[in-house]
Length: 314
Image 1: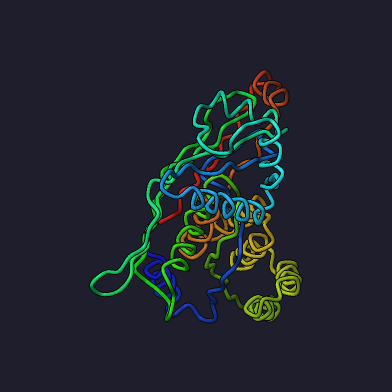
Image 2: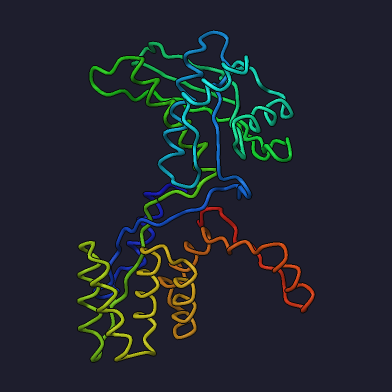
Protein backbone atom coordinates (compact mmCIF):
# COMPACT_ATOMS: atom_id res chain seq x y z
CA UNK A 1 0.00 0.00 0.00
CA UNK A 2 1.18 3.49 -0.77
CA UNK A 3 2.87 5.17 2.20
CA UNK A 4 0.74 8.32 1.88
CA UNK A 5 -2.44 6.23 2.04
CA UNK A 6 -1.19 4.51 5.22
CA UNK A 7 -0.48 7.92 6.73
CA UNK A 8 -4.01 9.12 5.97
CA UNK A 9 -5.28 5.99 7.68
CA UNK A 10 -3.30 6.86 10.79
CA UNK A 11 -4.63 10.42 10.80
CA UNK A 12 -8.22 9.21 10.51
CA UNK A 13 -7.58 6.74 13.31
CA UNK A 14 -6.53 9.61 15.55
CA UNK A 15 -9.48 11.84 14.73
CA UNK A 16 -11.18 12.85 17.92
CA UNK A 17 -8.55 11.08 20.03
CA UNK A 18 -7.57 14.00 22.24
CA UNK A 19 -3.87 14.77 22.35
CA UNK A 20 -2.68 11.60 20.64
CA UNK A 21 0.34 12.26 18.45
CA UNK A 22 1.81 10.72 15.30
CA UNK A 23 5.62 10.69 15.42
CA UNK A 24 8.21 9.44 12.95
CA UNK A 25 10.92 7.16 14.30
CA UNK A 26 13.94 5.56 12.71
CA UNK A 27 13.96 1.85 13.31
CA UNK A 28 16.03 -1.05 12.04
CA UNK A 29 14.39 -3.32 9.52
CA UNK A 30 16.04 -6.68 8.82
CA UNK A 31 16.87 -7.75 5.30
CA UNK A 32 14.29 -9.87 3.48
CA UNK A 33 16.80 -12.70 3.34
CA UNK A 34 18.49 -13.84 6.54
CA UNK A 35 22.18 -14.17 5.69
CA UNK A 36 23.78 -16.54 8.20
CA UNK A 37 27.51 -17.15 8.53
CA UNK A 38 28.55 -14.34 6.19
CA UNK A 39 30.62 -11.61 7.84
CA UNK A 40 33.32 -10.74 5.29
CA UNK A 41 32.25 -9.88 1.75
CA UNK A 42 33.95 -9.15 -1.54
CA UNK A 43 32.17 -7.57 -4.51
CA UNK A 44 33.40 -8.37 -8.01
CA UNK A 45 32.77 -6.25 -11.10
CA UNK A 46 29.40 -6.93 -12.64
CA UNK A 47 29.73 -8.25 -16.18
CA UNK A 48 28.63 -5.92 -18.98
CA UNK A 49 30.22 -6.47 -22.39
CA UNK A 50 28.86 -3.25 -23.87
CA UNK A 51 30.55 -1.11 -21.21
CA UNK A 52 32.72 -2.87 -18.57
CA UNK A 53 33.17 0.42 -16.70
CA UNK A 54 29.45 0.51 -15.95
CA UNK A 55 29.59 -2.91 -14.27
CA UNK A 56 32.64 -1.78 -12.31
CA UNK A 57 30.92 1.41 -11.20
CA UNK A 58 27.80 -0.42 -10.01
CA UNK A 59 30.01 -2.76 -7.98
CA UNK A 60 31.65 0.27 -6.36
CA UNK A 61 28.23 1.64 -5.40
CA UNK A 62 27.22 -1.72 -3.91
CA UNK A 63 30.35 -1.66 -1.74
CA UNK A 64 29.51 1.86 -0.53
CA UNK A 65 25.94 0.83 0.31
CA UNK A 66 27.13 -2.30 2.16
CA UNK A 67 29.62 -0.24 4.16
CA UNK A 68 26.86 2.08 5.34
CA UNK A 69 24.88 -0.77 6.90
CA UNK A 70 27.74 -1.82 9.18
CA UNK A 71 26.48 -5.42 8.88
CA UNK A 72 29.44 -6.80 6.93
CA UNK A 73 33.17 -6.32 6.65
CA UNK A 74 33.53 -5.40 3.02
CA UNK A 75 36.89 -5.93 1.34
CA UNK A 76 38.36 -2.90 -0.38
CA UNK A 77 37.81 -3.09 -4.10
CA UNK A 78 41.40 -2.09 -4.83
CA UNK A 79 42.63 -4.96 -2.64
CA UNK A 80 40.34 -7.39 -4.46
CA UNK A 81 41.63 -6.22 -7.85
CA UNK A 82 45.27 -6.39 -6.74
CA UNK A 83 45.02 -9.95 -5.39
CA UNK A 84 43.13 -11.23 -8.42
CA UNK A 85 45.64 -9.58 -10.75
CA UNK A 86 48.54 -11.16 -8.88
CA UNK A 87 46.85 -14.56 -9.23
CA UNK A 88 46.05 -13.92 -12.91
CA UNK A 89 42.30 -13.85 -12.36
CA UNK A 90 39.99 -11.32 -13.94
CA UNK A 91 37.34 -9.59 -11.86
CA UNK A 92 34.47 -10.18 -14.27
CA UNK A 93 32.81 -13.12 -15.90
CA UNK A 94 32.90 -15.39 -12.83
CA UNK A 95 29.41 -16.80 -12.99
CA UNK A 96 30.12 -20.35 -11.83
CA UNK A 97 29.53 -20.68 -8.07
CA UNK A 98 32.39 -23.13 -7.60
CA UNK A 99 34.83 -20.78 -9.31
CA UNK A 100 33.55 -17.84 -7.29
CA UNK A 101 33.97 -19.90 -4.10
CA UNK A 102 37.59 -20.58 -5.01
CA UNK A 103 38.15 -16.87 -5.53
CA UNK A 104 36.51 -16.16 -2.19
CA UNK A 105 38.89 -18.50 -0.40
CA UNK A 106 41.78 -16.75 -2.06
CA UNK A 107 40.45 -13.39 -0.86
CA UNK A 108 39.76 -14.67 2.65
CA UNK A 109 36.04 -13.78 2.67
CA UNK A 110 32.84 -15.63 3.55
CA UNK A 111 30.75 -14.43 0.63
CA UNK A 112 31.21 -12.99 -2.84
CA UNK A 113 28.78 -10.78 -4.76
CA UNK A 114 28.71 -11.30 -8.53
CA UNK A 115 26.31 -10.50 -11.32
CA UNK A 116 25.59 -9.11 -14.75
CA UNK A 117 24.28 -5.80 -16.01
CA UNK A 118 21.32 -6.46 -18.29
CA UNK A 119 20.54 -2.86 -19.22
CA UNK A 120 22.28 0.45 -18.59
CA UNK A 121 21.29 3.50 -20.54
CA UNK A 122 19.59 6.87 -20.74
CA UNK A 123 17.99 8.81 -23.54
CA UNK A 124 15.46 11.42 -24.52
CA UNK A 125 11.71 10.91 -24.53
CA UNK A 126 8.94 13.04 -25.97
CA UNK A 127 8.36 14.66 -22.57
CA UNK A 128 11.87 14.51 -21.17
CA UNK A 129 14.61 12.03 -20.31
CA UNK A 130 14.61 8.43 -19.17
CA UNK A 131 17.27 6.36 -17.40
CA UNK A 132 17.14 2.63 -16.75
CA UNK A 133 19.43 0.12 -15.05
CA UNK A 134 18.77 -3.62 -14.74
CA UNK A 135 21.01 -6.23 -13.12
CA UNK A 136 21.05 -9.90 -12.20
CA UNK A 137 22.92 -10.28 -8.92
CA UNK A 138 23.96 -13.18 -6.68
CA UNK A 139 25.60 -13.75 -3.32
CA UNK A 140 27.75 -16.89 -3.24
CA UNK A 141 28.74 -18.63 -0.01
CA UNK A 142 32.45 -19.42 -0.09
CA UNK A 143 32.09 -22.33 2.33
CA UNK A 144 29.28 -24.14 0.51
CA UNK A 145 30.07 -22.94 -3.03
CA UNK A 146 26.35 -22.27 -3.47
CA UNK A 147 24.30 -19.24 -4.41
CA UNK A 148 22.50 -18.28 -1.18
CA UNK A 149 20.70 -15.24 -2.60
CA UNK A 150 19.87 -14.08 -6.10
CA UNK A 151 17.68 -11.37 -7.53
CA UNK A 152 16.90 -9.44 -10.69
CA UNK A 153 16.51 -5.72 -10.08
CA UNK A 154 15.32 -3.11 -12.57
CA UNK A 155 14.98 0.59 -11.83
CA UNK A 156 13.82 3.21 -14.33
CA UNK A 157 13.06 6.88 -13.91
CA UNK A 158 11.82 9.74 -16.03
CA UNK A 159 12.36 12.30 -13.27
CA UNK A 160 15.36 14.54 -13.65
CA UNK A 161 16.58 17.58 -11.76
CA UNK A 162 16.99 20.87 -13.58
CA UNK A 163 20.08 20.69 -15.75
CA UNK A 164 20.73 17.05 -14.82
CA UNK A 165 22.54 15.15 -17.56
CA UNK A 166 22.06 11.51 -18.48
CA UNK A 167 25.24 10.41 -16.66
CA UNK A 168 23.98 11.92 -13.42
CA UNK A 169 20.57 10.30 -13.90
CA UNK A 170 22.20 6.93 -14.52
CA UNK A 171 24.38 7.29 -11.43
CA UNK A 172 21.30 8.02 -9.33
CA UNK A 173 19.41 5.02 -10.73
CA UNK A 174 22.45 2.76 -10.25
CA UNK A 175 22.59 3.80 -6.60
CA UNK A 176 18.92 2.91 -6.23
CA UNK A 177 19.61 -0.53 -7.70
CA UNK A 178 22.51 -1.09 -5.28
CA UNK A 179 20.42 0.11 -2.34
CA UNK A 180 17.57 -2.27 -3.18
CA UNK A 181 19.96 -5.21 -3.30
CA UNK A 182 21.66 -4.31 -0.02
CA UNK A 183 18.35 -3.76 1.76
CA UNK A 184 17.37 -7.31 0.87
CA UNK A 185 20.37 -8.86 2.60
CA UNK A 186 21.25 -6.40 5.38
CA UNK A 187 19.45 -4.65 8.24
CA UNK A 188 18.80 -1.02 7.41
CA UNK A 189 17.08 2.03 8.86
CA UNK A 190 13.58 2.94 7.79
CA UNK A 191 11.22 5.74 8.84
CA UNK A 192 8.05 4.53 10.54
CA UNK A 193 5.07 6.48 11.82
CA UNK A 194 4.01 5.50 15.32
CA UNK A 195 1.16 6.66 17.53
CA UNK A 196 1.71 8.09 21.01
CA UNK A 197 -1.40 8.05 23.20
CA UNK A 198 -2.65 10.55 25.75
CA UNK A 199 -4.07 9.65 29.15
CA UNK A 200 -5.60 11.37 32.14
CA UNK A 201 -5.22 11.23 35.89
CA UNK A 202 -2.07 11.97 37.87
CA UNK A 203 0.05 10.20 35.24
CA UNK A 204 -1.36 12.34 32.45
CA UNK A 205 0.96 15.30 33.03
CA UNK A 206 4.15 13.23 32.88
CA UNK A 207 2.81 11.34 29.88
CA UNK A 208 2.01 14.63 28.11
CA UNK A 209 5.56 15.88 28.78
CA UNK A 210 6.88 12.63 27.32
CA UNK A 211 4.84 13.13 24.16
CA UNK A 212 6.20 16.66 23.83
CA UNK A 213 9.79 15.51 24.22
CA UNK A 214 9.28 12.67 21.72
CA UNK A 215 7.70 15.04 19.20
CA UNK A 216 10.89 17.12 19.36
CA UNK A 217 13.22 14.13 19.00
CA UNK A 218 14.30 14.10 22.67
CA UNK A 219 13.68 10.40 23.18
CA UNK A 220 15.84 9.96 26.30
CA UNK A 221 13.80 12.59 28.12
CA UNK A 222 10.59 11.19 26.68
CA UNK A 223 11.38 7.75 28.07
CA UNK A 224 12.05 9.21 31.53
CA UNK A 225 8.65 10.88 31.53
CA UNK A 226 6.81 7.79 30.27
CA UNK A 227 8.52 5.67 32.93
CA UNK A 228 7.48 8.18 35.58
CA UNK A 229 3.93 8.06 34.27
CA UNK A 230 4.03 4.27 34.30
CA UNK A 231 4.95 4.25 37.96
CA UNK A 232 1.98 6.48 38.74
CA UNK A 233 -0.42 4.42 36.64
CA UNK A 234 0.94 0.95 35.78
CA UNK A 235 -2.45 -0.11 34.39
CA UNK A 236 -2.56 2.55 31.67
CA UNK A 237 -2.59 1.02 28.19
CA UNK A 238 -1.60 4.37 26.69
CA UNK A 239 1.57 4.62 28.78
CA UNK A 240 2.60 1.02 28.03
CA UNK A 241 2.09 1.81 24.34
CA UNK A 242 4.27 4.92 24.58
CA UNK A 243 7.03 2.97 26.31
CA UNK A 244 6.83 0.51 23.42
CA UNK A 245 7.33 3.33 20.92
CA UNK A 246 10.41 4.46 22.87
CA UNK A 247 11.89 0.97 22.79
CA UNK A 248 11.28 0.79 19.06
CA UNK A 249 13.04 4.13 18.56
CA UNK A 250 16.06 2.77 20.44
CA UNK A 251 16.07 -0.48 18.40
CA UNK A 252 14.93 -2.71 21.28
CA UNK A 253 12.24 -4.43 19.25
CA UNK A 254 11.66 -7.40 21.55
CA UNK A 255 11.01 -5.04 24.47
CA UNK A 256 8.73 -2.93 22.27
CA UNK A 257 6.62 -5.99 21.50
CA UNK A 258 6.33 -6.78 25.22
CA UNK A 259 5.09 -3.27 26.01
CA UNK A 260 2.61 -3.30 23.11
CA UNK A 261 1.28 -6.72 24.13
CA UNK A 262 0.80 -5.53 27.71
CA UNK A 263 -1.00 -2.43 26.40
CA UNK A 264 -3.35 -4.58 24.31
CA UNK A 265 -4.01 -6.84 27.30
CA UNK A 266 -5.10 -3.70 29.18
CA UNK A 267 -7.15 -2.32 26.27
CA UNK A 268 -7.84 -4.99 23.62
CA UNK A 269 -9.97 -2.72 21.45
CA UNK A 270 -7.51 0.15 20.95
CA UNK A 271 -6.79 0.23 17.20
CA UNK A 272 -3.77 2.54 17.57
CA UNK A 273 -1.97 0.09 19.83
CA UNK A 274 -2.86 -2.78 17.51
CA UNK A 275 -1.36 -0.85 14.59
CA UNK A 276 1.85 -0.09 16.52
CA UNK A 277 2.23 -3.77 17.42
CA UNK A 278 1.50 -4.96 13.88
CA UNK A 279 4.19 -2.79 12.32
CA UNK A 280 6.92 -3.84 14.75
CA UNK A 281 5.96 -7.52 14.46
CA UNK A 282 6.24 -7.26 10.69
CA UNK A 283 9.95 -6.38 10.97
CA UNK A 284 11.08 -8.26 14.06
CA UNK A 285 13.07 -11.46 13.58
CA UNK A 286 13.74 -13.57 16.64
CA UNK A 287 17.46 -14.06 17.39
CA UNK A 288 18.87 -17.18 15.80
CA UNK A 289 19.94 -19.74 18.39
CA UNK A 290 23.22 -21.66 18.01
CA UNK A 291 22.59 -25.19 16.74
CA UNK A 292 23.71 -26.81 20.02
CA UNK A 293 21.41 -24.64 22.12
CA UNK A 294 18.52 -25.23 19.72
CA UNK A 295 19.04 -29.00 19.93
CA UNK A 296 18.94 -28.85 23.73
CA UNK A 297 15.64 -26.96 23.62
CA UNK A 298 14.15 -29.55 21.27
CA UNK A 299 15.29 -32.38 23.56
CA UNK A 300 13.60 -30.64 26.48
CA UNK A 301 10.37 -30.44 24.55
CA UNK A 302 10.53 -26.68 24.07
CA UNK A 303 9.29 -25.27 20.75
CA UNK A 304 11.71 -24.07 18.11
CA UNK A 305 11.96 -20.27 17.85
CA UNK A 306 9.90 -18.98 14.95
CA UNK A 307 11.18 -16.06 12.88
CA UNK A 308 8.72 -13.24 12.41
CA UNK A 309 7.64 -12.47 8.84
CA UNK A 310 9.45 -9.54 7.27
CA UNK A 311 6.78 -8.31 4.92
CA UNK A 312 5.47 -4.80 5.49
CA UNK A 313 2.22 -4.72 7.40
CA UNK A 314 -0.73 -3.33 5.43
